[in-house]
Amino acid sequence: MENTAPAAPPPNRFYVVPCMLTICSLFSGFYSIVSSFNGHFFAAAVAILVAAVFDGLDGRVARMTHSTSTFGMELDSLCDMVAFGVAPGVLAYLWALTPYGRYGWLAAFLYVAATALRLARFNSQTVASPSHDFTGLPCPAAAGMIATAVMFSTHVFKTASTVQHVALLLMVYLLSYLMVSTHRYLSFKHMDISKEKRFQLIVGLILLLILLASEPPITLFVASALYILSGPVLAVKDRVRRKRPKPVKQETPLE
Image 1 (cartoon, rainbow, N blue to C red):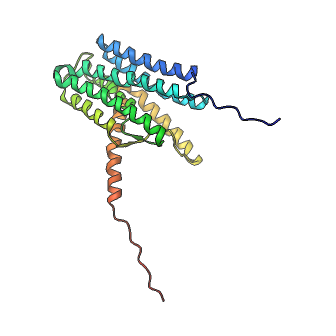
Image 2 (image 1 turned 90 degrees about the vertical axis):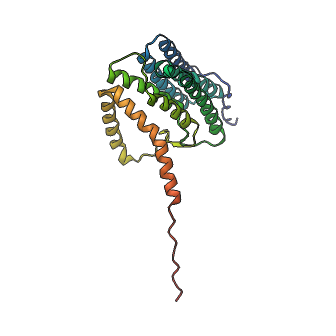
Image 3 (image 1 turned 60 degrees about the horizontal axis):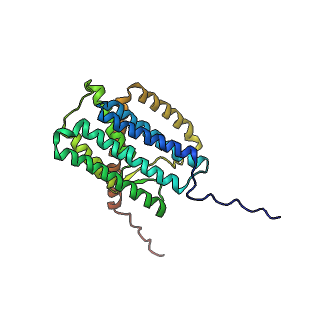
């Protein structure tokens, strides 16, 4: 008898482990919303970061166990909308945007709408033209910027109450723009690292872990801000590279 290849799993199959990790991300996002309404802004910010951890785990577990499915992708997008769209929007509004009245809740709504557009574009691009990098700021990174800003403010200014600063209003508008922009952001999912540099990479990751553990509210805020700024910096770098004139080969006269 001939050996037949096993049939591919149906695209709508339900895989328990990655889907439960996605549900954990949804739970963390919902907990963040509840904490924001109760005035526990630091706990709400930490819950968003926990949601980002679960969001990063579910996809990796699905790929490692060969349990990816269309059902899991759709579930992930719906949960991301809550954890990285609604939860950060509610947190930003109740923490810093309420004093600005109409401009405040419009900024929060714009952030949520930009998250929905970002997720829809990401899903369509993943199917049509997969790429190693992100087009536009990933919504977990935008949510992490809001969360780390709350943690940074609570740690530095020693206050857990609401704040009022125009920079935070502008930050929400900026994050909304970057999510729907075409700026390129590195994904770090497919890194081609030679064997000679793997040891240096491990040492660098250990040093980075020590740095993050020293003062998490400050180092996480700085790391988030640097990643947010990396998109416009890469855009400027690519534009300068395209405008740079190419060297013209000079033909040598024939003898």
